[in-house]
Length: 129
Image (cartoon, rainbow, N blue to C red; front, side, top):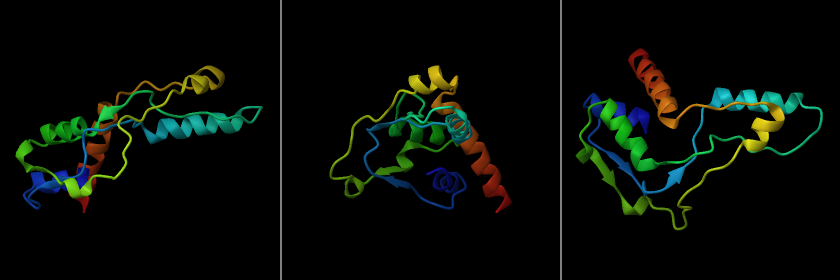
């Protein structure tokens, strides 16, 4: 989605075609998740942990954020009902309280902070390609 949006901003693509964007997902920052995994591996006892941000965001808001950052008009977004999943969970998120309390793991990034990091990286990679 990021690369396609950049292509739209650079007039290399006409539109972003997506399915249902009125669902919410829990996204996080992979380097912080790897830190949590490392802490799990260092812990004395084996146990199960959820590693997540603890909050969810609408996919629509993700796309709007990217479009705003790249100055893309929202009319370049095309929602295609053929891309809808037959069954889709409306809101997926988790709680990493156990990892935070037992492993002393901290996660404090908003998804939009993570998205900005990803967008900047993708812009750099696009320029280098």
